[in-house]
Length: 219
Image (cartoon, rainbow, N blue to C red; front, side, top):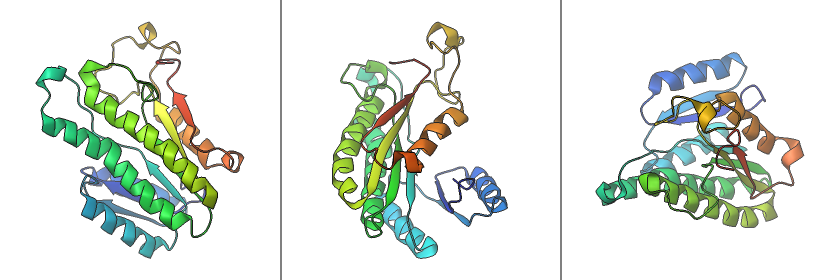
């Protein structure tokens, strides 16, 4: 984003060192940058950060919701609190921020929101070992489509980038060639390329869309 001329606000739950390093990189590129340490599952904290972001940056052009918790294990051993955490992290936080950003962006009749989804989230199917994560990402996909219809009236686009097996994912197979047609896990550059498209002038007429960045996995 900084390379493309945007000032950048960062929210991290734990990785302050990484946030500071990213902020420094942004500033070297000439961007104004700030970071906040917060758990976006907390509604009050999220709303306060959004208000402070607008005060500091005086505008809100882009929102990228790009992280969420993950849980994998036997479905019948999953605790209800785990289900709640998956939805708060992967659905509620992104939906809440998307609503707040849209309300600000529509005042200038322009804005771009990109939610990071999951390659299987566009279909109803049983995935027992990651049922809570899948359900939350599916809910986000549905919500994104609904908000996209409303927001486009005011020039705000909302889209989804859905990775498959990323190199930082958990429970990766030893040999990606056995499950991914492209023969490798996705890189940061793969994901960023799709996000950049949705932020580009060429995507001004694109909303409610989903790009799968999975190398053929899950297609």
